[in-house]
Picture 1 (cartoon, rainbow, N blue to C red):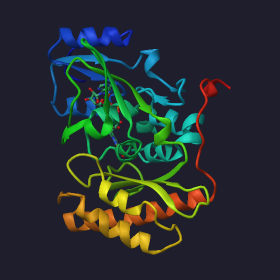
Picture 2 (cartoon, rainbow, N blue to C red; picture 1 turned 120 degrees about the horizontal axis):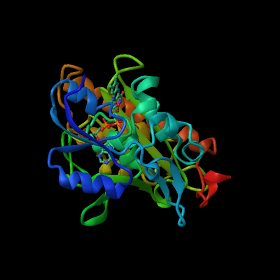
Picture 3 (tube, rainbow, N blue to C red; picture 1 turned 90 degrees about the vertical axis):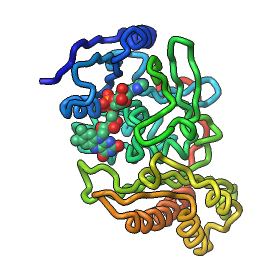
Picture 4 (cartoon, rainbow, N blue to C red; picture 1 turned 45 degrees about the vertical axis):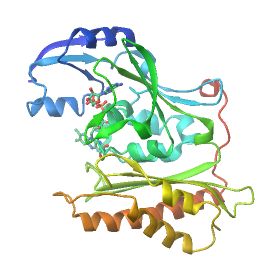
Length: 306
Ligand SMILES: Cc1cc2nc3c(=O)[nH]c(=O)nc-3n(C[C@H](O)[C@H](O)[C@H](O)COP(=O)(O)OP(=O)(O)OC[C@H]3O[C@@H](n4cnc5c(N)ncnc54)[C@H](O)[C@@H]3O)c2cc1C
């Protein structure tokens, strides 16, 4: 049994916002794979839960009029991985969330919970950083949009206000068109394992597929919050994809931009080794995918219904 004083099933985002503003002790529950584990440990016990799980407008993936991909937060990991829009335009995000837990957790856990829990180890976090995802928050004062790169304020902490519900993630065309990517997770075993380190590298090559036009590097667990490595990203621009020196460049460059710690899972030194090695391997795979002509064009509105 869980120690819950009040449980509300919100019918709409507005309903959830109202319930949150009326109950100071309320917390949102979506899939519940974090919330219920914490409740069992006594965190938030005797409090109020506002469920957003049954709000239809929070499920799915869509294309907006300008080609922006809209990922709705209550979409579970399994649905995300197998969604045709994700497979076509953001396959590396689908692969990243397919590393979460085991099948039961992926059927229940959601991308909204994974980002809003503020965890640096969240498997979608590194990729969402490289996508410059926009977090859409709706609260009593209306809607605001926060870049995910400015969303985290510390371990388990975000800029989300108590009454705000994350109602979408937006990925703009300039952040996915022409890019390939790869997420690599290191854990002690393949399943049911929180990341010791997670790394996503994405590239956009020039038309001749010889030069890196843009590179993006995102990490989970390389710092107290998910991070990007902007200096190394800039250093890769204009580099020849067939020059093996790019792997040395990324592998050493990122080390100046991270801040991992020792924990019971791994020492700081081991994490630094992973940070370097996973960046090299992810870059290699992202380039291979570009050379294999896997980079997507722009999505068309209504495409998900065809
Ligand atoms: C056995 C097990 C294995 C796991 N393995 C992994 C793993 O390998 N990788 C990994 O990344 N995670 C893992 N997790 C953690 C968890 O499954 C994920 O973090 C998941 O994404 C949480 O989503 P949820 O919908 O269940 O969140 P919930 O538990 O419902 O909520 C999580 C937090 O986010 C808030 N929240 C949820 N949705 C919203 C929203 N729309 N707006 C605002 N706030 C919101 C909640 O208030 C809460 O603070 C594991 C969990 C378990 C139990």
